[in-house]
Amino acid sequence: MKTPFLLPVTIIALMALQSNAQTKPAPSKEATPATKLAQQKVLESLPFANKEDFELATRGFIARPKELIIKDDNGKVVWNMESYSFIEQNKTAPETVNPSLWRNAQLNTLSGLFKVSDTIYQVRGYDLSNITFIQGKTGWIVLDPLISSETAKAAYDLVTEHLGKRPVVAVI
Image 1 (spheres, helix red, strand yellow):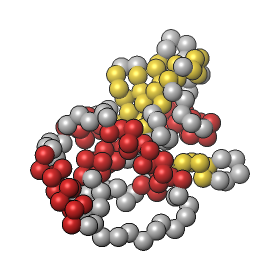
Image 2 (cartoon, rainbow, N blue to C red):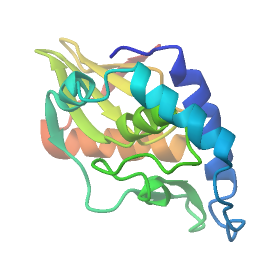
Image 3 (cartoon, rainbow, N blue to C red):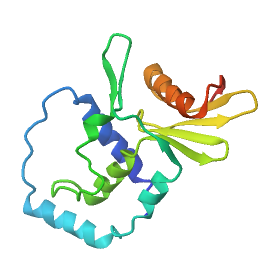
């Protein structure tokens, strides 16, 4: 099940969740009969039993910290992956959530350091985007350095911890 068009929608939804991560969530409402019917149609129309997406998303996994909360120098949280812990891997979507979007969100919570190929590594879940480290002859070539210096540093620290210290020689 390859659904790349859902990624932007999921990212926007995660951004909205993150912006309210420090506030008390509004009480949820029950799904209406129309919503339940629409969600059931999605369940029947897509191959949810096919877990290839999860196998591909976890391929090359190296490590993840026990807790993924990144703070700035003043202690302010700039990224809190733990705030998405309600999106459990083996949990079916609530009746109020489109099952396809829920599945995409589950895939997006698979965070940590991953080996993509012999010289390419990614850190996922440290930000709204993934940061890629290419092992060059003289150091790391970094693609997409994330949205804040704190998350980029935390990703670099994870890479250094597991792959050894190397300088960053280029950022693209």
